[in-house]
Image (cartoon, rainbow over all chains, first blue to last red; front, side, top):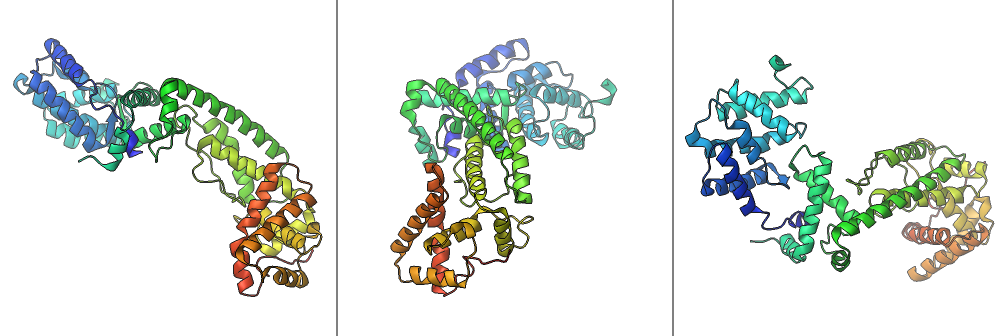
Length: 148
Length: 294
């Protein structure tokens, strides 16, 4: 079975993905080509760490769109923030046992980042998303009650 | 450094590798209903195992019939594989109905539970995404188990085929004698995980070998002594041959016409050899061929 997972094509459209990230950056916040390539490297590492397999171009474009107008965002740290968000995304995709779709998890991350995390990735990962997943696992409502 | 596994996977033609990966991606999208661009490694493995099973590839060997796949294309081969599995489902359903309609009078909780659980298989089985899985509980032990490498509906169908043969063979014997023999072998045969056919097959085989009526099912000390005289002087190969001949005679006595049933009986006779040999060496066949009181 391991060797069949190793069937993944060696070059999985990486250049195309970098180009798409640069294009997305032009309407959100800009990334350099080096930063975009670095984010893809980081994605591969995050997938290895979380033992997940990705088939599409990833969630970076969605993260860029979702977080571009956060009041806590420092444009100078855009690539670094995206890298952290991407790590958290895959980690909590596992933690929530895939019960949340990509879009739902990203929306929850944005809400918590702007809310109780106050723009802190450490708090977002260490506390806010932990709590969200705990509520999800215990069958409680995981969405912000204020929004219901 | 590349692992041996990666090296062997790398030997697959690049075009085929891309096609397989693309198929896995499509299956993953269906699995998540388009809600997620990634899946856990465990889910990916399950999906890939299902694809390999549908395509007839051995996931552990990692080679498979690549030439056939290249000729047909992965997509078409998968479509054909799915169609073949759908046919197997139909065949299995028919076999299951036949089995349900012809259950023997003998009670066995594990048999009843297993047959009941297989009844749920047909709606729980996910032929399209998880075709290699067996979503039901199969507790009842067959006299000759289905090989472990069989998966999905192919495993269930083979199990049903063997179970049907065993039940059909059981029905040829007197119910009262069969129940008495089973009670002698295992007092709580209705509640424990024991096979109903195996003791009947062994006693009937012993009687045939001793030149007696297999339908009597009753093997007394005299018959056991006769069997010991017959079998003890023989070498292993000769014993095996004698058992096979006995199975053939028993098949004739039972008027078995289906080659599959005759083969099944022969395999059972062959499988008896180690137990029989051990019993002969200890000079006591009473743990192999049972007597009983009706």
